Amino acid sequence: MFTILANNWSTLLSGLGYTLMASLIALVGSLVIGTLFALMEISAHRWVAVIGRVYVEVVRNIPLLVITMAFYVIVPTYFVQIDGFTAGTIGLTIYTSAFIAETVRAGIESVAVGQMEGARSVGMTYTQAMVQIIFPQAIKIVIPPLGNQFINLVKNSSILAFVAGFDLMYQGKIIANTTFNTFDTYLAVGLLYLILTMPLSYFMRHLEKKWNVA
Amino acid sequence: MQNFIDAYSQVNLNYLLQGLWVTLEVSVTSIFFSFIIGTLLGVARYVKVRFFSAFVGFIIDLIRNLPLLLILFFTYFALPNIGVRLPVIPASIVAMTVFESAMLAEIVRSGINAVPTGQMEAARSNGLTYTQAMLYIILPQAFKAMIPPIVSQFISLVKDTSLATIILLPELTYHAQIIYGQNINYMIPMFVALAVLYFIVNYALSVASRALNRRLSSGIR
Image 1: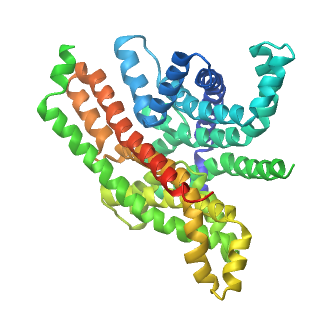
Image 2: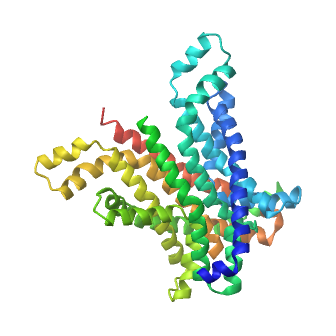
Image 3: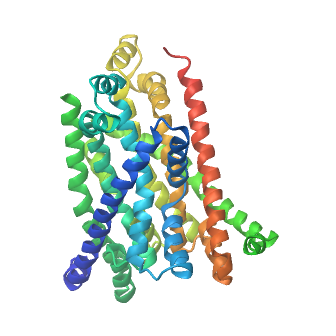
């Protein structure tokens, strides 16, 4: 395993970089889209709420691979040329946004209704109340599950291997195919994934415990 | 529109349904095994036997933090390197079971944690052994609370079987790829079909879970 790591460290590191980059871009993108759809879901306008609900339910129930492949093969065929990394990252973003929408919606709903009513009755607009009263309280509830979503993102970004996205899994596959030493290669790739995800997941567990007590 | 009509020919639809059948087969088998193994691991982690529980916990954390795709590669491509050669379907089932067992173990553990400690104390003081108390008092209550997370884990499992296309498991996504590989006009119809079929299976699961949850929780309170 260590010979594989020693001989291919630059390839593996660049793979790790792509993995991290795709995960970070998808995290930011899905946070924005997810929050938007969460707000739609709790909207007072019935049709807006229905659209939000349908988006979340549909995206959540379709495999990430199907969403990613759709971007990878349909977009270049009918619209513009995009590379595997872009298609993969867009797929990841769309897929994760549905889960983030659920998390954010649950977070907002767990802030007592009285808070919104109180804020409105002292003269705040809906937006002001949302931004200044509800969000700051919801964020503490939402952060631990969001952290877990990020861990999922890092793991799910291995989907880029399907679409030639140059990520860790893809580079691992290539190294395995050239060295024929599949066992050691995939052990090494696993180790690198764990270096990313393990500390994060212990940190999130710590955070959850700490904030539950408070 | 003509593309859609052509794409959904009897032959193609049959081929897709064959794929769906393999998806369901692999999912249900993996669900069955991972439910049993996951429960055992979850309990093993909960009981806090010195070293043993910590060790089990560490292994669970390791597996949970790896991509399923990597585990799939490992069982299918890496194990032959040390002499273990599994055919595609067993390899998929093994990989799924390993991954989902670890996921379920965590759900089971937190489910048991959520049962008030008084329940165990009361059971023990009534003369039940620890094992009896666990089996008849704690686990049934814990499972009730665990239904929603367990079902959503099963939904991810059904979705995750699509990853096995990479080792050429002849499941739904793979069959769809073969169909649109023959005729590029079938591409969009196939993705629509994939979305619809996966949605039906998974949405049915989540509706069933909600119904089950309502029925079981109507007893308490």
